[in-house]
Length: 148
Image 1 (cartoon, one colour):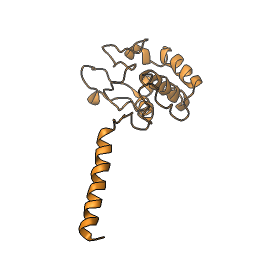
Image 2: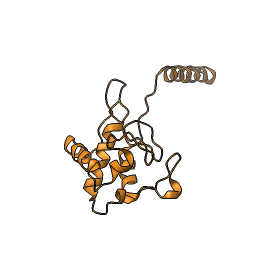
Image 3: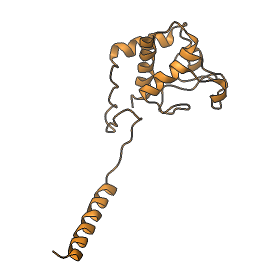
Image 4: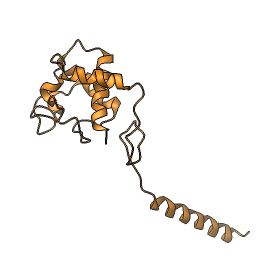
């Protein structure tokens, strides 16, 4: 085969691959998760179980965690904190690791995004929350926003 024929063959193969790639629809999930088809919920992060989600809900609603005070008992947000039940995120990408991180670290006043004006203290201001409890709250919030 001549180099001219080889070049034509390679060029043709590249065009076929490009055409196939352009005709496929891409589904993008949150970083750290595997995107799921539209008719299925996304893959559950490692370590997240129905029990951790249930514990997280209980902790979220508890008065000692302060979560519900700013984000609402229904997680739909208030003037103090954003909605946590949808797929819109104001401070992070919505992945499970980022949810756990922001709970642990909080959001300093200088980094709070409009329309909110209240800072989020680390662990929601509850120094008594353990790492396992923070992970449970993160699991609960992740489950709400990734149920679609």
